[in-house]
Image 1 (spheres, rainbow, N blue to C red):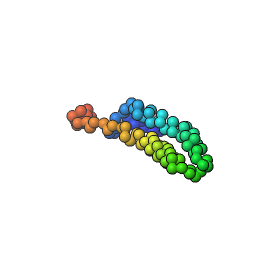
Image 2 (image 1 turned 45 degrees about the vertical axis):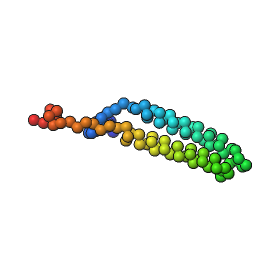
Image 3 (image 1 turned 135 degrees about the horizontal axis):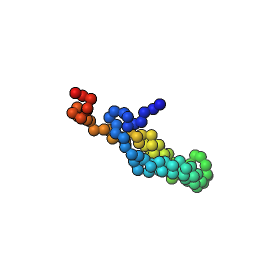
Image 4 (image 1 turned 90 degrees about the vertical axis):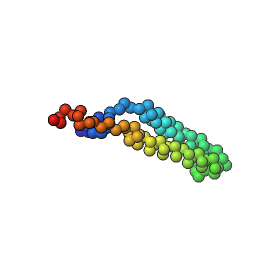
Length: 98
């Protein structure tokens, strides 16, 4: 059984940040809307399909993949940059020390 984060030394429990929900919403938008945007983007030009023949198609495709990658890495690491370390306690506050 895993222990909750609040039980670890040096980590203070915190409520879920609003940034996590915004990030989740953006990631959902990219995951569900991205393929439709890519299909719409690649449907123009002299020939539709892969490989793209216009610069705007290449830029849009690379941009969409970059946004996805940035959001994906942010979703994986959000726990690391939202956790605040607990303030160190002085030895005088510890009742077990005599």
